[in-house]
Amino acid sequence: MSRLEQRKANVIEQIEATNDEHLIAAIEETLAGNTHYALTNEQQRQLDVSLARYLRGEAKTRTPAEARARARKAARS
Image (cartoon, rainbow, N blue to C red):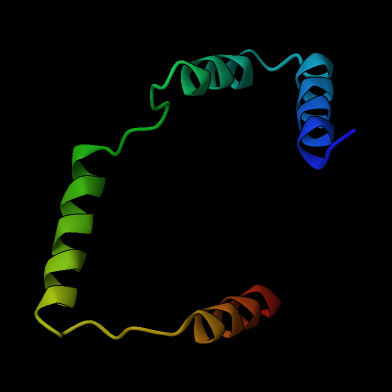
């Protein structure tokens, strides 16, 4: 069995084991090519504000390693 076939079998097992109606609906939407998550208007506004700050050079950016270290430190607190 190839790696892809093993992954598919694992996903099928997880689907068969769940009774979560929302999860099944999300999987159906994803497989149909539809998004099952949409930002609220407020979330979109906050994202736009953040992007504008970044484009103006006002936002602090971090490397992936810095972001991981920061997340780990926050998780320990």
